[in-house]
Amino acid sequence: MSFSELARKYAPWSMSKAESANQCGFRYNLQNVQKVRAQVKEASPERRIGIAAHSIIEKILKEDPTDIKKTVFRETTVQKLASKEVDEVMALLHNMYAFKERVDAYKVKLGVTNTLVEHHFSLSDQHTESASKTDVFLRGVMDLFFQTADGYTVVIDHKTGTPSPDIWDRHGNQLKLYSIAALALVPDMKATQFAIHYIQTGEIKFYESKMSAEYIREKIIPWYVGYINEAAVAAQAAVAKKGWYCNFCEYTPSCPLK
Image (cartoon, rainbow, N blue to C red; front, side, top):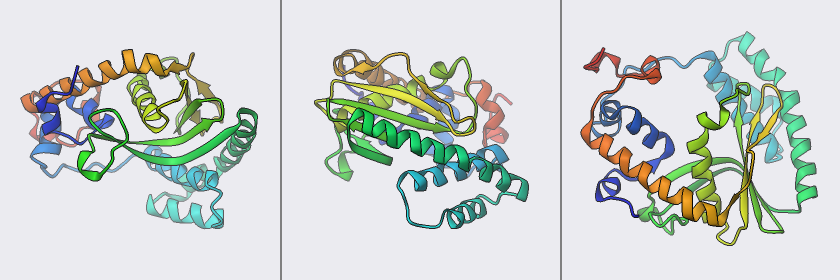
């Protein structure tokens, strides 16, 4: 199974773009094809706090020599956080440093040979790392990536919310993409493990099982190709669909279903 010509037409993709197209082709077409200026909605305090927290924990994990207070001031200023919201970010620092301590111990225990923080990856249409900017088919970002000496990889994604019973249903597509990206980064890996780190609570939720390289090649990659091909069809058709995402849509004034 290979990517359709239509999928290639709309490349480069990201998982968020593919999900957007499959949710509502009308919205996708306005945003990514016609590039219509949206009615911008102000981001919620929770989202702005989340963006600031992601930037701060990235600095902490990279052992950036910059004074953390300066980093917090810069990120909370960029996100235009109110004093109460800045306090909420400051309250998360303890969990962030505790997470770094766990990561450092984890790296020693597992024999980690390579660590990537906030790694921007690019995949070709052959599911390998892109050799140049011209063959990029899909882009994405891994918050934290480990490679171990015995042939395994681990991908950890940061979230600022709290764990929910349906976390793997909600983040399943993201997990699948990360498994393909891990295989592209380490073609001879045995398997990859996925986890979500909740900054607010300090919890780390590991997916129930590792994904072997064989499983990724035989099951995940065919799913991925089909999902992107479906997204391309939806993008081309530009049909409006209703869903939970309508509450957050910037194109509501133009929607034929409003």
